[in-house]
Image (cartoon, rainbow, N blue to C red; front, top):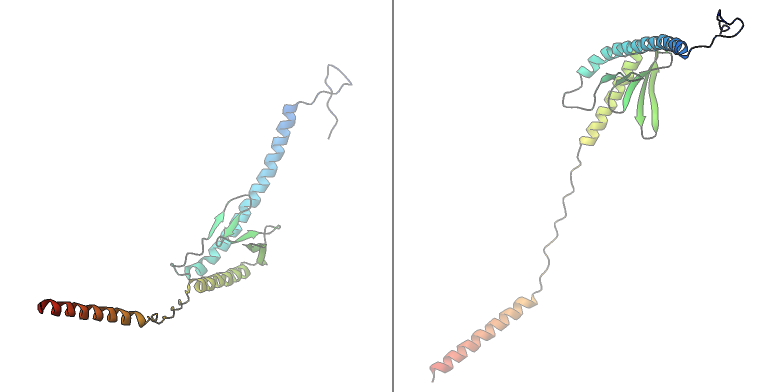
Length: 184
């Protein structure tokens, strides 16, 4: 920095730096940096939109009944092109390289990385195909095993015999009583 200016009234004494002037300079510098950051973010979003347009033919082929994919560009601090809930494309540090990443329970993995949109489109195509196959496997319900038909439980033959015996004896007793009453 330059030396503080001296005022004309007190030669040789430094003029106090005003905080308001320092804040004004700091705000101007921040605005210049912010302008650069906004321009970089706009460039990232533009490149992601180009890639999004390149992916249109792929997602046009995905059947409407499959709702795994929710593609869109998020405009956060780091712009991202979302393919589905766990996979997205983000620009690399140099702001020209596409990085296709997937969030897993073990962390984030890079599925593909390239400056060329066709390489990323191929990687996204492979990813979409794998996800559709996983969905098919998840949707297949294995046939439930039919429960083995158990034979009816064997009933004891003793109780019907006892019941019949008692019923027969009661009938005979009843007939004997009836015959005895008639003979009187």
